Image (cartoon, rainbow, N blue to C red; front, side, top):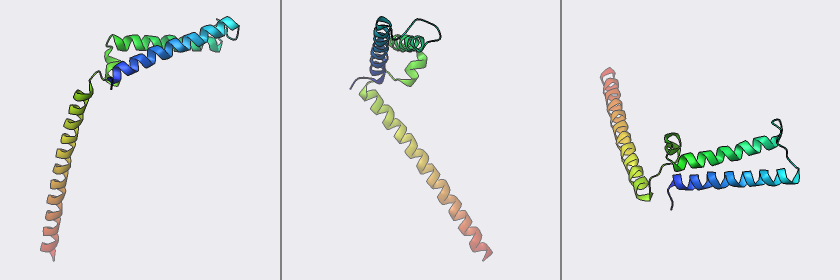
Length: 113
């Protein structure tokens, strides 16, 4: 499986080119215009932004690499295992505190009775 960053880069660049191609066909057939207030301008801008995001992701823009990691399968699996181990430690700690509180409450109730 490809890294998420590479898949996102290909999707953004290819999608942007497709949108621009559709816009060009619409312009050629007269269905859209170059006026600033038309929807054709918005379609053109969408395609341009998608291509720019794909290129920025290919160059390693930090804002996009946070969203789409460049790690391979092994690195992602290792990070996932580390996160799961950390969650397990937190859960064990929470259980221990809950058990301690329950014992303290039980002792306080036994003293009152």
